[in-house]
Amino acid sequence: MFRSRSRDEQSTAPQETVTPAKRRDPQAPKGRPTPRRSEAEALRRAVVKPPADRKEAARRAREARRAELAKQREALAGGDERYLPMRDRGPVRRYARDFVDAKWHVAEFFLPVAVVILILSMVPSVQVKNASLLLWLGVIVMIVVDSFVTGLRLKRALAENFPDEQRRGAVAYALMRTLQMRRMRLPKPQVARGGTPRR
Image (tube, rainbow, N blue to C red; front, side, top):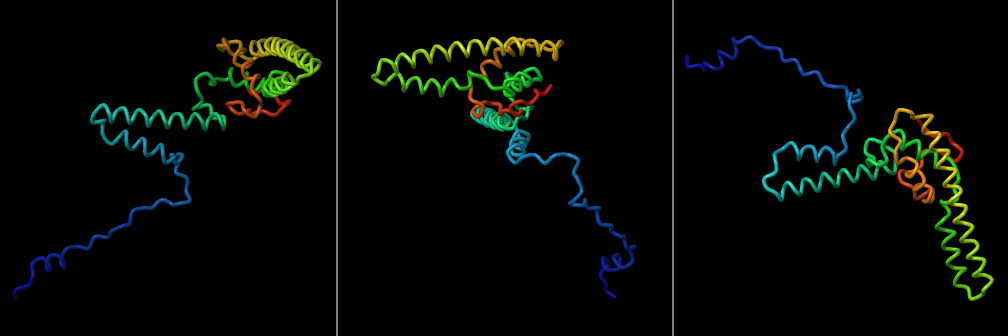
């Protein structure tokens, strides 16, 4: 007699079939790369709200610079050109690096030879000091000749392979790279000795 109206309505209401939402297969590709945690956090912080004051804006700018430097360090180690510093970007600079890395150069042994010459110059013998001086002069002459030849060959190769590209400063960039030992070069060498430079 005093039945609940809501129960009657529920009993007489047509039953709706609820279809579960279609779930994505966890093994299926997403169609986009998963962002790194640092990138996702930086993006989330940037999107959440604008900076409240100058301190907050400066802090965010510092974090963005830190993230950019971290990307550049990874790129210098791995060769990812998207995040390389501006001086290392572009096909001309990549070719110049590979041109240097594919060959032996006298200048890359400059530091070890300089240490040997310094040690020899400390020996009290006059003959040893004279020998160290001659060795020093010989190394300097060989570096100058090798750099001159390398610069000419690289200039010619760049003119042949990149006639329409901006080549200014590429030869000097490559010659500075010859002064570094191979294992200490940044970006890391991407070609083996005797290999062919990439275009």
